[in-house]
Length: 335
Image (cartoon, rainbow, N blue to C red; front, side):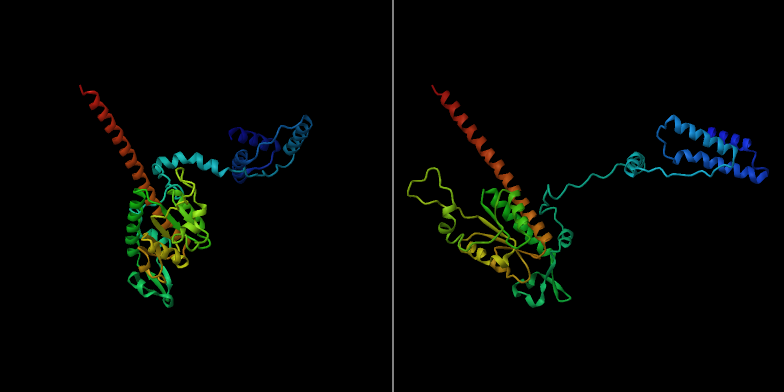
């Protein structure tokens, strides 16, 4: 900037313009602006000798005549680069940044970490209109607001944890878990929950007789056992636990499971009789976000049961091998 100011003063002295105190102030202000011009102007590309000659002639004309006003061209600023450069300074004042939370796609919430605030945010407290009330669901209703029943989320959390305990126990014993969710727009919720815990699912439509008449409905599609005889029929497997995400459309599946003493878990809204289900979960079954939350929590409980089952199987195998080794050692010690 000093070099720029010096050249500016020499130019002003050569031109012979300006006198007095007012002119000195203007000269200082113009010198400061001329010095700042180098910080905001974009560097020019290298020019040819002809352009250099023309520019030198233009400069000589400007020196001999009146000084042109400096023009400022704003330099483009890379905001992202600037923020990255300032990040160490912010960290030195504010400390380390908080760790990023894990995505819900990679880790499902567990029943122990679930809170009423999460249930409220998912919209599980909204029931149906009072005209659609089922009398048996009234113990789970907290109140009525503008004709819409409000479900008590304390009951929802308690019943959901109980359902998770049942799901975990069935998975720990190596049982077959079946997810049923056939409502349009919720098929991906059913499929993702079942695949995350190595379970089975029905996401399109429940075929009547799948459990009560399994030999005719599912039998032809069941693979035969390796040790089956030529005349033996394929034996279809029945689920050990049925989880229904929309019970209104799948009452036939619930009745079939009840007839064969298969426990059922279902999201029971205020228009559903919770007594038809073994383990009801009073909540809103119309909210996709709420149904997804309940399905993820149940799937996480099933995954925990699968882990416990795998650990128990490894422990039994290790104990069996150790028992054989002990027997062989005892036989070798005999005279």
